Length: 454
Image (cartoon, rainbow, N blue to C red; front, side):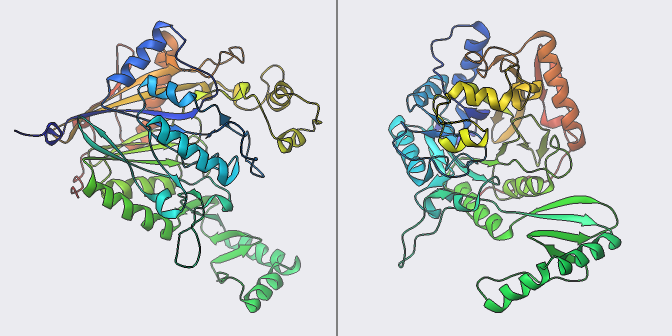
């Protein structure tokens, strides 16, 4: 008798950034429950868990990039109620409450029975695949973040020292490409402002290796300027990080029936709506290494979709749950950042950040509140279709209501899908819109040789 998993059939639902802080299961709107039904009916539903599950038993980390996203551990049960089975934890909020908050989150995820990948008590754990068994087979998730402060990096455990809790990080090399006149001017600045002398002192002290300046590449106070024919920004992957992650992708492709790779990224080159080159480089390398699907997130907006060698690349899934305005506690550092005193309350901080009338930040733009839920269907190991369900996250709704996703219909749903159509055109991806759903059929996409299994 054949195992069910050997039929190579599966449906995957993919949700974007989850910044959850309120209970979900009490709500009864039909568009919300229909979305939940789609998530439950999928064999595997994935989401990016952006935040720390704890009850403020750990002190906050210093210099969190924006909000400190702690949420009640009970919210994990609501994600399970929705159908989520596996989450990525590598992102720029992994260390909002330090190493203690990270480890506490992992314990709560294990207690809730949710698969996870991307953070760990050491580098081995952070880079390790998270495995989930479903009827359709064994699913592996590998997760990394390109948005991180240096202390977010997980450290390897050795015979000499314990490992360092943290995230699986993908470093980014950023070059500012300029013409010859400009690079000569930068070199003159570096000499006159003392940066050349600083670099020479560091080289003599040999505390850590410094890259050398050349005729076509100049390092200026930590930034790289490269000689080119035009002005642009160019990004590439840190090759050591990239190869270490790909090694785990290849391992997962041998150990699981299905492999999802997730990357959290805030970086962009010239336009935030366009995925940077290093993400495109990394996504395709993951597919070549055996991944069946690439799930990008972090920009908090939808980006284009590419079908590469018969496998989908979602450069950004956008937001899924976006409940920033009702966080119940903030560290003093955050109040200080917005010029508020110790007597300020959480709503004061939110108003200072976004304005009383949603003047600033995410609430000021509709694109952060319009998203999609892709459902990918494979049969006999081949991608049959991707169905894109548009989502409305409640733009301009009151603080206690906004941020919860529901299926979008009518004019709004059409706008979201047409936006995805336009964003995906540069990748040669055709999205057909029918009955309020976007459909990608691989037989209408450009064909490339498929990666080998295992």
